[in-house]
Image (cartoon, rainbow, N blue to C red):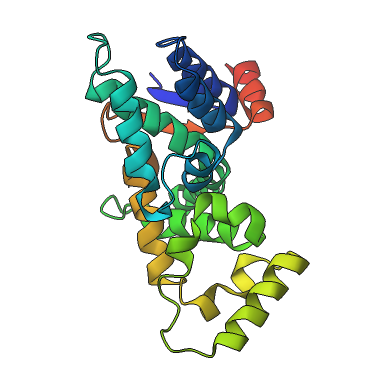
Amino acid sequence: MDNTTHVTVNSLVDELSDYARLDTSSKLYEGIISDFIDGVGLPDICERHTLNKNIQLAERTIRGKLKEIFKDNTLVDADVINNIMVTYFRLLFFQMLVEGEKELVKFRKNNRIVRLTGRSSFIEGAERYLGNLPYGLLVHLIPQNYLFSYYVQGSNATKFVNMMTRVENRGIRYKDFGKELGFWGETLDDYIDKQLEKMNIKVSNGYLIDSKTKQRLTFLEEKKLEAVGEVG
């Protein structure tokens, strides 16, 4: 019996919409969930709602605000808030998960060695997706404070400004400037791993696994889900 959970954009939006009903009196909560559904990055959410000017603390700030909103609600505990964040991150990185999983399908076809997890294959697909994003979309997934954190201190300031002007104005893809920023290769790999942890996802035996429920996950675009239903 197939024990795989099919995850789609619509199913994640539905989950967040259900969470929105936990508190219908807080305009801030309503705004945060709406931004989650729209795929807005955490630093931008903080800026929209004037929560914290320090973008490095964006995630901590959002989690703190959710706890504050529900402090008197006995039905909402830390697990519920964590589930809200897990759902948000899965939606935010949905297409990256889809592209990474495509490589896992190839991995399973070509490998019969159980001890291989398939992590490298997933990372390959995820990196390819991120690498093709223009700067304007990328910063929703990788905030500026991360992107610029590895840029060599003391580097030519004029060169950096010229590069960023070129990147922002011409829609140059991440793969064409990531190495120059220093946020590429192993650094990007580690970042992707950390995002998977936030989504409660791990790669094992060529599959995406929910680290909490231990169920297999597959992230499907709606057309593919329809095809799966027809086959079933």
